[in-house]
Length: 419
Image (cartoon, rainbow, N blue to C red; front, top):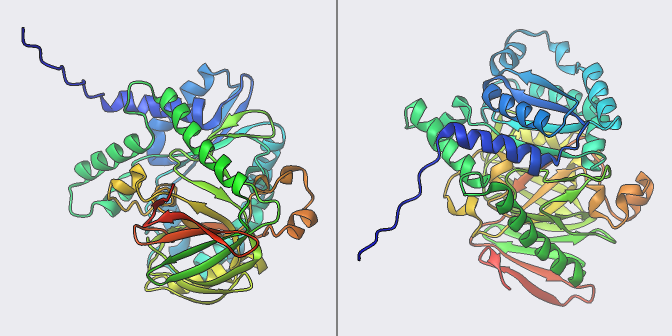
């Protein structure tokens, strides 16, 4: 008797969208019964907001509060506001968010903005607005960066983002292609998304255990336009996959995630490095970044486009020229192998090894979550108003782990794990 395999039935879009909402709540947040949730989202993401809200209440949330943004009203500020308006931020709003987190609320952000929204706007206005917002947001950011509460970021395929990725496609086709990529990267198109995430987290945590056992003092990146030594902070600790926040909830801060990461020493980074993917930063696309570090700080910087915005970023504060994170991502990661450039850090950083300018994560120092700032600084942790990831890995980049005695061990060859 001849038998024929039955092909799997493709899941409907609404089913996958609902699964993404479930993954956001169960895997991303690990939301606790009775916990409040504060969510931010572009207005186009309302369908996903509704799914997440439903799953949050099913998980026992006491209250879900959502704050929406809108691209057209954002642009209206840059087109019509007075010059002095760009030094103003909604401090009252961010104070309220920080208070919510201190009182135990979880945090969820939905990303999906146009990566080039502010292209053509005055770079000085963009820089001042970002700086003002960063200062106002710092009390809340410190709660998030220190994992004082459980938090996560997921994505929504907005038309403007889809058209930036697929400019030659009609809008409906571009959106469909982006949704396909988001669902695949977020592991919601298989038979059991939650189980898939549990298995993926185990793999990432096994890698962090290996790196923590090695106790390297530095990483060396070498490839086209790159020869960079990133010294690691004293008592640094590698992290990856799910994290137990200080409130005891297990969360995945990024959906998707493919990285393992730790804290560099703010004074021990030397050499030059070239970006391997564009950086979309608050509506500005910065491409072809090339910088040189001396004693931890960027002393030369240029970019093929967006250079003025890059320079403004580096002038944010003392810590904005120094590193707060270094992360390793294999070139064979699913996001990398998709061959897509997302123009969105949440995805592109999970396609390539990367570094981040600015604020460090205290949890990447052993015992760091309970340390005062001066002790973190003594171990090499950086402090800044910003935390901006940009990609430096590719299939042409090698990474070595360097020990305190100067001996080296291959970690990555041509972008993939050496062992």
